[in-house]
Length: 242
Image (cartoon, rainbow, N blue to C red; front, side, top):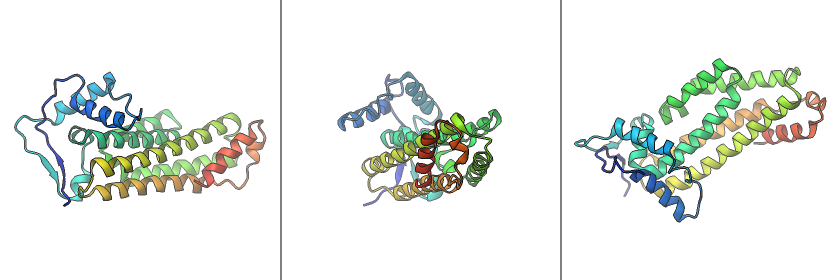
């Protein structure tokens, strides 16, 4: 029978180093002979987890049950990690892939980078459903296409930009595949999990399609002016069919 995702806040072991959450993540991936969690024992993750304890753990609190989709959309990553560290860890990597592409696509100036970095403070599904972020993506890709078509961006800078986008798309797609597999094991038969994955899948698909649609350049003469023509054409070609 399906059950709701539970977020217990009365959690023991806060003072351990490493935390039980870190050990759970490492043990899961070690059993799969995977090195995907090699960084979980880092001091950064220890400090991050301790901050989650400070923010969400209570000695006498009752568990929170995510009984509506609205509660899932309002889910805070820290509370999710304390309760379901293995699944949350995969969500973390998916989000990092998203943020990395945000910076490549939308962060062409210091001011824009500050805006993009502010998105990282949003709750996971608030971030994923943001129309404002999608609009920024669309506008940034339109501007990028214009720069390429008029020759304002060419040569090495063009090659690097397209390559960074292509690599970002590949990382995003890989992290999505890992997330689906992880959720199917660690949140099995829990309500709203399928909807969570459906939402993430739609966002990833939408962003990849936006990149492909906007960067289907009809004229590649700009890139041909440079000795790296073949590399640039290959990158833009791959993006066009993503």
